[in-house]
Image 1 (cartoon, helix red, strand yellow):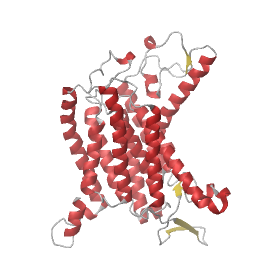
Image 2 (tube, helix red, strand yellow; image 1 turned 180 degrees about the vertical axis):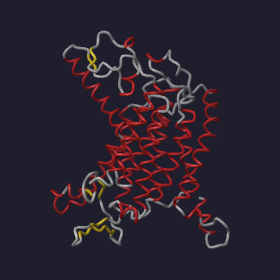
Image 3 (cartoon, helix red, strand yellow; image 1 turned 60 degrees about the vertical axis):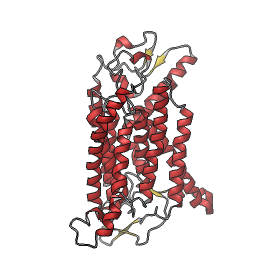
Image 4 (cartoon, one colour; image 1 turned 30 degrees about the vertical axis):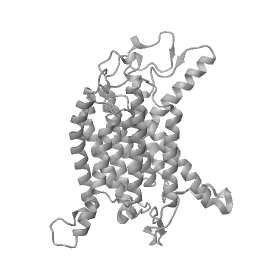
Length: 419
């Protein structure tokens, strides 16, 4: 909104009228606004949630702990702190900004409905898993089809030319094209063409490539959204991890939006992707502001309203900047959380068929494995991994998970040069 007002004033002599034409300034303004909004909204909403007794529905074995009575649905704070700055300083006619705003609202509503059922209907299961998957898959389908159909979603492919003196020169094609490619790590020239994967379809390989891309988009949105949801189990855990991931995605988006930097790192140049930078800075600011209240001991939980939305946003950003494969590295913590639950369930069912009670971890997702004492273990169950001798405090587990995410983020950025 402000961008368009200042755009009309840029030809005047009004001091500062051109500031909002710069992506860097708009991004910094977005992160400052999101921090202020999250801090301001947080205090008021926490008081309101306490007044209305909007608290977390705890599992039976958690009901006597210190988290009882802490307000939930704090993800509303994060969503407001993202949407307001983006609506103020973002280009609202940009397809990438539109898709990210739709993602935030769509998954925010899904998470809110889930929290509403848990809190007010006293149903600790919330929305059924099948309904969540359908809603997430529907969003992925919408994102994939929009990128296929939108004339704004184009790229200028990077081309490497070898010179006679064994050196290489990278340039970008002058005309933006509708290509179906993504960046892959550790491979020279970095580009993977979905259409080439589907080359067995012959003359229909282009169409088949886009079908594959839409399927991949659905899988990524669903997997990352659920992975973030599983990671949201300790004070500050998800907010901190997501903020770190957001910083890495912001850097990748900025590099992709600047032709010179894209040329230097030998990756595709994406016209218009600078709006993703603005959105991601608002995303980072909202999460850091939320940590003011969510860090141990938490004054508010984000609930599914926040966790589902945060995970979906991360997945969609990676898809928009064509770095979705890098999420395996960047979101390594989410992958580990997902896999721990899958492995735990599969191992338990396998033992049940044999009449044996067995588990791999003390409790899944993975982060709970480290803070469960032996006194809380099922004496009749055999645990494959014993875990620490003494429970580790959740604040220490959270910081250690942040450190792992920082390492994974650095490795992800290093892949731009390691090939």
